[in-house]
Image 1 (cartoon, rainbow, N blue to C red):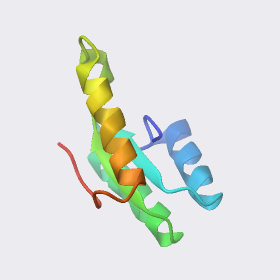
Image 2 (image 1 turned 135 degrees about the vertical axis):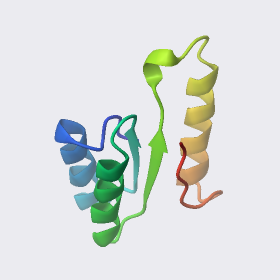
Image 3 (image 1 turned 135 degrees about the horizontal axis):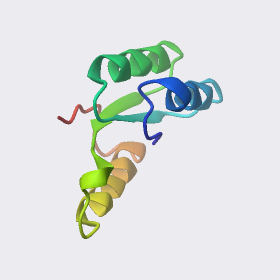
Image 4 (image 1 turned 120 degrees about the horizontal axis):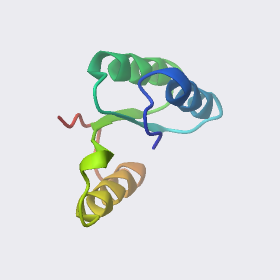
Length: 86
């Protein structure tokens, strides 16, 4: 999972990971179209990509962080397919 992967440095990191053979969870908060484009470019490389939306600044008590980690593990294990969260 690359946070802020919809644009700038996060996007470049996500694309580099995909070029290196990784499947990538593309995180964003305000840039839906850009995140979708990043995911499309990753898929065009033959890798899998999922887009998740989360505002980490609003996390309280860490519950959402644990749920998000579980989601990422489930995706990586192939337990669930592509998703879009809004």
